[in-house]
Every structure is written in C-alpha cells, then in structure tokens.
Image 1: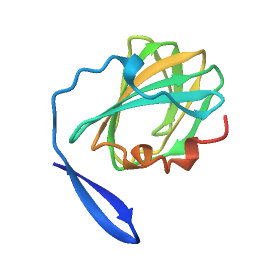
Image 2 (image 1 turned 180 degrees about the vertical axis):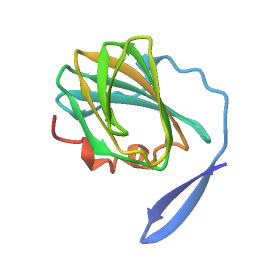
Image 3 (image 1 turned 90 degrees about the vertical axis):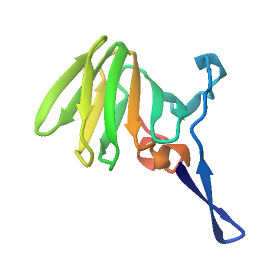
Length: 137
C-alpha cells in the first residue's frame, strides 16, 4: 500500500492507498494548468503513476531530478532533453528511460503530448508542491 501523509490540525495523518481496478477516459481526468505552456493529467496507482503532459512549443521543463524512476513516451511532437551530458531529441513513437536522481531538463520543439510513468508516484506532483513547473515557461 502507498502511504499518503496529510496534515490535519497540525498533526500528521497517514492514509494507506490500496491498488484498485479503475477505467478512466482522459476526458474524466482533471486537466491541471501549470503555466501558459504546460498542462498535465495524473492517474495514480499504489506504486506507479501515469502523467499525460501537454506542452506547447517552446515550453521549458527546468533542470531537476527526483528519486523516482521515469519512463517518457512521446505520443505527438518532440522533446529535446539535456541529460547525462547529452542532448537527446525524443520524437513521437520514441521512449526515454530516466534513472532515479539523474538531473534532466527538456524543451518542447513543437506542440507535444507525452506520457510519463513514475515509480514510485511523484508526491510533489500529487500534492501540487512542484514549484519548478508552475508559473513560468
């Protein structure tokens, strides 16, 4: 079970999230506006998370790293990554795997839709404390 920590009246409360069967069309998943060039939708399981990320041309995902393993699959468009001392362009139909703790940055070369899979789920995305993505290009 995945633990979720909440603060209630200044005290920590831990909820256990059980894996469950769900069927979700993307149209039923909240579309979150992070900045004028970036939107996303999240589907969170017990030990895994799927994010559908919509980036307008020129959108920059600033340099960051996280303890989560990440797999990025580009559905439409192209993202240029700066990672491990390299520049890698990932086009529609291609996949990039990012190990935990590896710093990376990305730029949408055209309007892009990507699917990001994380293990474990990104708690900063779930709790909306991911300030590096909010309010800028």
